[in-house]
Length: 157
Length: 324
Image (cartoon, rainbow over all chains, first blue to last red; front, top):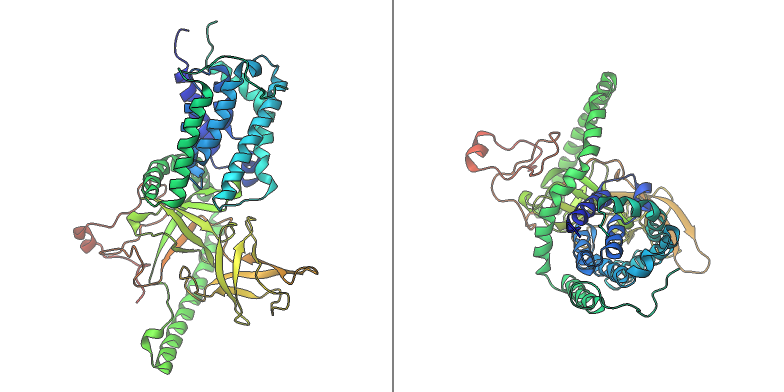
């Protein structure tokens, strides 16, 4: 390895954060995928040593600061996504992109489920089916997002 | 598809196994959540975080603002003239009504012999620009560019020219979160103007609908009824318009009927709202001379602070601040 991938990680996370926070018309905001989660998942799979659970936790906390009803909610959910990515990175990495997307869909659904459960426990229930839409759009975008993220840093093998 | 079955490979990450590290991080997150939910000191952390995130939100929203101001610049002159004429008549109309209201109020107070029984009215208001509309995950909230520096406090009523918009929730140093009345978490104590029946209006999550879920099926309510604030609960002053009933759906099974109403406030098109102080002893009542910033010179990362004494003397507070 020549340089650490950290710079690429920080850059892509910042871009994902901007994409998450930039104001959009309301119908577009509903289908907007969780870019930060996708980015964290990608780095957990590709660079489990540099990315990983700590990165996920911090990104989640930043999301909480901007839009969480409860501090720590997204931190837990994104850390869980990163954990699954790190744990299964060797299996996921070798699959073709379309199969990866299925895994991503499962992980994102779990992520939304964790948020939904915590919302319910903490008394901010939001029981509309639309909140599950980003999991689907995120999985659909994965075959586009993953190669883009791959361009930001290429490890010398 | 790759399942998340039993692990087959050795530990990754730095040093410890990922499962152990995840447990640590998860515990930290849960501790934070519990503290945020139960304790109050975490409010200070949020206060600081809101101060940090506000510039970012302003920056991200600036293209939208630039587009709006560009559009305004190119608005046809004729349209401006028309709007000006309409506004002038509206101002005259409102002024006359205010006069009449003041006279009525005086008569009323004299009649009941209690000068202090005059219902609470807005003692001060402050315009605030909408920085960001947060419809994340269908929460109906907006972010405004006024905070504790301007005397804003938590649970302060927010209006626009047509009715009630909502109330402030998280207040940062230069910004505040406003919970719209259409947010599923919002409850507004209201009264049906025609009958005086009191109930609670709850947000539905849809941007133009609120519901009255606690009305019995035999309640005297009709389509077109006006809902005003009842003044209970202490957040909103009594008698301000909230919504108009648009739909009543009786249900056979439940003893309740489903009543929907459309807010008067233009929640989707507002670009500026008003913060209201209506109790004399309200918390955060600004100390010293009251100034309102001049609007239109947006965006302002740090809106008008209370002016130092010298400049306040030179430029006394202009309306719309104090109404005696």
